[in-house]
Image (cartoon, rainbow, N blue to C red; front, side, top):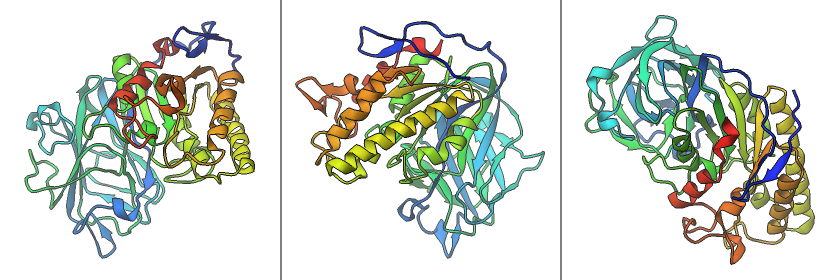
Amino acid sequence: MRRRSFFGLAATGVLTPAVAQARPTARTGWVNTWTSMPQLTEPNNMPPPPFTQDGLVLADATLRQTVRVTTGGRRLRLRFSNAFGGAVLPITAVTIALPQGGRAGVSAIQPATLRRVTFNGRSSVDVPVGALVLSDPLDFALSPGTNVTVTVYLARGQASNQITSHPGSRTTSHLLAGNHADAADLPGATPTDHWYFLSGIEVWSSAPALVVIGDSLSDGRGSTTNGNNRWPDQLADRLRGRVAVLNQAAGGNRVLNDGLGPSVLARLDRDLLAQSGVRWLILLEGVNDIGTAATTEAAQKQVADDLIAAYQQIVERAHAHDIQVYGGTILPFGGSFYDEGFREEARQTVNRWIRTSRRFDAVIDFDAAVRDPATPRQLLPVADVGDHLHLNPTGYRMLAEAVPLKLFR
C-alpha cells in the first residue's frame, strides 16, 4: 500500500516523519539476521591457486568463513547462493560453530559448539545454476552481535571459473586442502578476505528487518578488516538486536546500470523483496552513477534525472510490499577522482530532490553528517579515509549516528 509521508526537520538536520505511522503487529517467523550481496567473482577475487585450477574451484577443499549476526534466535538456517555460477555448486558437507574467542576472521572454532548442517536430511546438496538453497532448521542459539563460523567442504569442486561470492567481506576466510569441516582449527590454511557461496543466515524470531542497499560506502571500504565497523554494523550495535540489519551493498555498484554486480534496479527483487521479515529499506546509492557518467553538463543533468526516476521506481516497488523507504543523501566527493566537470552539480540536484520531494517515508541526511562545514563539497578530514570519497571507521560511526532510531519503532 502507498503511504503519505509528512516530514519535520529534527534538530540534527535529519528529515524524519512528523506523524507516527501505524506498524504491523510483530509476528514470529524466519528473519534474515545476516546477508551478503551475491556477485559474479572477478578473476582477481577468485580463490588463489591451487584452489582455482584447471577450470575447477575448491576441489577437495575446505572453506571456513565467519560472519556477524545482527539479531538473535534459538533456531537458524543457512542460505547458499549459486546465482552467478557457471556450473552446479556441489556442497559435500557443512558445519557451523562459534569461533574461538568469539572473534571474526579466525580459523579456530569452539569444538563444543560444532553442529552439522543438513539439507532435506542429507549432509550434501547440489545447488543448481542460478539457484538458492536453504538448509534444514537447526537448534543453535545466537545472541545479537555474535560472530559465527560456517565451514564448507567441496569434494568435487565447482566446475567453472564463474562462481558466486561477496568480495568485499572485510573479513578473513580460510582455505585448506582436504576435508576439515569438523576440525577445531585449520593450521596452514590460506587466508583470503572474501566470502564465497554463503549469502544469508536466518533465525526464527519476531524481530523485523532493515535492508541497506548501497555501494562501497555501505559495504565498508575503509573500515577495519575483521572489525565489523561499517556504518550498518555500527547502526546494528545501536539497535541492540531489536532490528535485524541486512547489508546488501557492494563496492562499485550502481543504481542505473550494472557495475560490480547487477544494478539496484536489476537486483531489487533478490536483495530486498525476497529477504525474510523486511520492514524498512535505507537507500544510499548513486555516487558511482554520477562518477562514471561523462563530466559534461548535459550528461550530468541526464544522470541526475535518471537517478531521480529510478528512486521513484524503487519506492513504488518497495511500498507494494509494505516496506518503508528511507532515502539517504549522497556524500561529498570533492577532491576525489570523481570530482570533475558538472558532477558536483548533479549531486546537489539529486540531494535537493531527496530532501524536498517527499517521496521517501523519511530522509536521512548522510551528506550533512560528514561534510566539512568550511568546504561543504568535501568530507570532514576526521571522517575521510584519505581518498576524499570513502570513510574511515570514525566517518562510518558518524553515518550510523545520523540515523534516528525512532524510525524503527
